[in-house]
Image 1 (cartoon, helix red, strand yellow):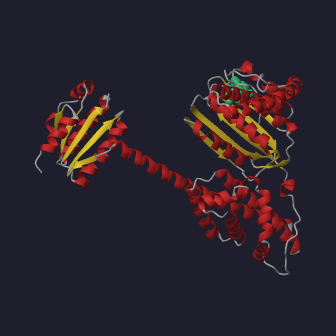
Image 2 (cartoon, protein in one colour; image 1 turned 45 degrees about the horizontal axis):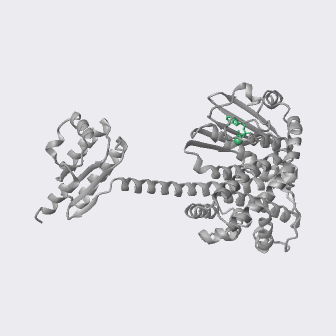
Image 3 (cartoon, protein in one colour; image 1 turned 90 degrees about the vertical axis):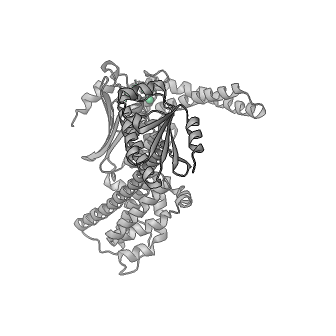
Length: 517
Ligand code: ADP
Ligand code: MG
């Protein structure tokens, strides 16, 4: 997919930088002046609220909060350097994963497909701004689909260029509007601020990247972002660290002797995980630092078996205690970089100074082992999550067929809600199994909570009654509504011979309790 970038930018978003400069500069000037008094108002409102509760104060506060958010967004677009954030290595796959997590509850019927290649490749830049930009893009994509569709996100590195695409199957953007994208305040949404894409374009351009849009009305939109890969040199940083080394130490000795500096270095690399270490330890008794040492030793000693079993164990713990996945990714990537630094230093200190070729081989092996760790971690993580889902599904199914014993060998099955084919299958299964295990003799099925039954489901229902009878159990049907009776009649009268009918559950219970034991 080699698009001519200039073409594409021209047709999509020509002149964004200059537009941003003019509109943005004026707006930013105003925003700055307006923000200060509003912040003061916010403070006074808080004071007021401490003195007396009033719903108007709440409303005023939340409206003010909205206004301040808009102002801050605007300032970010126009003067992103106001918040001077350090450039750092950004692993976009990690960030994308964690942003997707934020949207979990907004996805409804939206299918998310991610295809992340080359996760080890980083870009250089201001991390919080990139996070915000991808947040804005994903938010737009989700909003464009009205709760139904497919969101595909890809990441890969081609010719030292990191390419991220965000594709939706939403409403699309009409061709005549394409050139307006990224203009501050351009929005087609009633509640939109039109600042999201402006921020995205601004961040990408400020970092020397490219952005392209492809869109077809009613079919969907794809945003393609291209950034330079962080160069191998800056990425590796080749930090000369002061580490302990004794003549003749093996790699393993070296790592064992330098556990403390390793931890320190790792904590610098894993900025976002650093503050979570205690929390994670408390939640799931997962000791990240200990595990990092283990992983590193398995890697340098090439103990594949142990490595895989550690990965599986961690994947399970992570899933069990629902620790955020993004932390794991960031943590392992940080281990990878730290490990690399240490090996480099080992190479310097031991003066074996292996030739370039064998150094590359070493790097390749190590990367492969860490990838293997991640893969196995994810497999075990998702396996556990899948099993959990399956268990929950079973529980719900069970709850939807509540067979309640009321007397020895007599049970009630009150059915409520929609009875479709799927549910009929579940009912059939559970009912027949329960009759067998608990030797049920009489099953009272109460249908007063069922307003409607599809014709297809009526047929299945009759089959269930027949099945119950074949197992030597008697069915008493209660609470049938006229509409359901009509459907049952047109499905065939056969069941009358198999079942007994009572107008209400109460009548049936009277009968049952007057039975002699
Ligand atoms: P907002 O979301 O507040 O409207 P944005 O700057 O994020 O502002 O987006 C501007 C406009 O661009 C949106 O109102 C919408 O019309 C259009 N747009 C952006 N992304 C998409 C998308 N993925 N699909 C369809 N339209 C989009
Ligand atoms: Mg938006």
